[in-house]
Amino acid sequence: MLMCKACNTRFAQGTLLCPSCGRRASDHSADAGSSGSAAIPLPPSPKPLADGPEDEIDLELDEEDVVKHAEPRAAKPRPSPIPATSGAIDMDQVRKLLADQPGLIEKGMGLHADAEGDPLGIDFPTPVGSIDLLGRDRKGGFVVVHVPARDEVADSVSGMLRRMGWVRKHLAGTADEVRGIVVIDQLPEDLVYAAAGAGGAISFKAVRLSITFHDLD
Image (cartoon, rainbow, N blue to C red; front, side, top):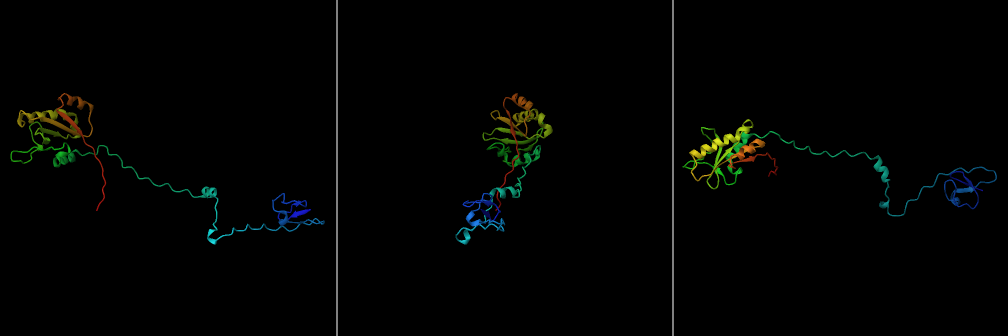
C-alpha cells in the first residue's frame, strides 16, 4: 500500500497516479508501512520555467480577468452642435450688404446711376416709398429690390407694385424692362398668389446665414 505525500491518499501498489490529486505515484508517494503512520505532506513542486533567453519569459494574464476587472474608460466627449439660429437675420445688414455688393443678388447687376455715372440706387426716394436698391441688369433693365422688415412682409408685393409703377412711369423708357425682387427669409403662401397676379414681374430671393471657417496665416 502506498500513500501520496501531498494529500495522504492511500492507493495500491502499481498505481501510476494518485486517485485524489493526480500526482505521479513514483514521485509523490511513500510506503504506508504496517504501522499506518502517514508521511508528512510536502508542498507541491514549483512548475519549472521553460528554457530560453531571459527576455522571452513574460508574465501571462488571463484576458477574461483583465477585461472583467479593468476600469471602464471615460466616454470621449462629443462637441456640442452649433444651435440653429431662428429669426437672427438682421434685414438692415442685408440691405447694407446688397448696397456694397449688388451682384450678390444677381450676377452682373449694378446700381442705377445718373448721367454723370454717380450711383443713386441706394435708398432711392420716391413719393410712393423709398426703394432699398434700384439696380440695372446686364440688359439695362431696371430691377427694384425690396428688403422688407418683418412687419412689412405682408404688404411687400403691393408696395413693390407701387415702386415698380413709379419707375416705369418716370425713369424707364418704352423698351426698358422693369421687374422687382423681394428679399425675405420665409415666403408666406399668400405672397406667392399675390406675385402671380403681377404676371411674373416680381420674384423672391431667400436669404440664409452661413458660418465658414478658414485658417489664419
